[in-house]
Length: 463
Image (tube, rainbow, N blue to C red):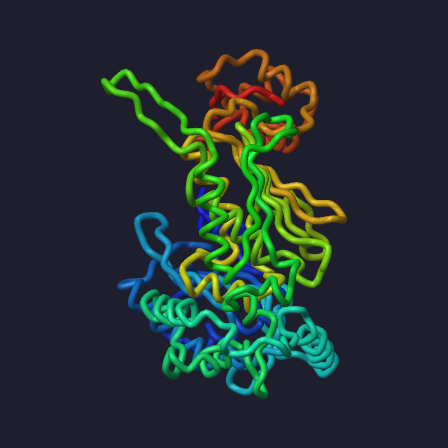
């Protein structure tokens, strides 16, 4: 199930708004501003309030118009993504709205919030709270000035690439000449009053580690899955886009190639151990969401024969745990200025969709899905090799274990069969949770929807 299908199935709420058509773009802007001020969400055009898909004719052109309108009508400038998604043989336009840190956001002179399923004007107390949040947001590390950073320290080629990519991808219109580094960075919120910010150093500094040693990325490749001796070690530093490319190459170059033999082909097919998108998105998340203010922190990449671990000193939003990353969720970037540059460069895809697309990509390619772990020190992502047959460790109940024991790889079970044979003593809701848990653990594969849903045992072994 795609993200937009999940949103439609979930229905309107504090983070989801359906709009029939793009005729009233002022209304669309109001919903977007309300979500910017309320923690993020999604505005879907081409779906009615009951969740019926109506579609948007010429959706690509409409999306471009919506993007331009929102850029012009929302202040301060917001980090948004407007795109087209197919659903039920039609196309809808969806605005992915991250939770804004520069609140309050305004459109047409109004400050708006989400209250339940409604967009409403903020009260005086709510406006005061938003202003307090903005004061705290300005003090975040990426917005602090970097007094020793000068124009001579900037990588002008990287600045030019950001401007070029933004214009070619239609993701932003950065005014001025790309040769005017200060003007470009000012437009990106990275320069003010003659000084550049820490975000400017991370994104465009030739060697930001001179001023901020914690921005370095440490990468190790081990001979054994148990660790011990490593066969390669690198310390990476430079503009964030270059670090991302070098980190991706380190992982893919040191991961073993998997040989695949098929009956319908004479020769073997060599495949990379990990899909490129999954590796890059995992690294993007680490670089965009890490805690740059932690001088003892950083990003560490460890490549083992059968897995890759990517750790960063970051934190999930308050109230979130690792399971939230596997479900539909709004984007709340820890460093929106840095994330924005990655987005403009085309290195970060649709906002708030990265973890879901990583899971979907792995499932499509028959690879165990990623595993996220969160503790007080940071966030660790584990990617499993294409050759791995071991599913991530999860706690299973006796009902789930009995089903797995009874099914051979490729065997099929329906919900009714599972409930009758293995889960008679629990409610239908709990039985469905059992099956969903096995799907999340890569032990079953779900096909179909509604009454035609079936679950297929794959060849993963429970860890």
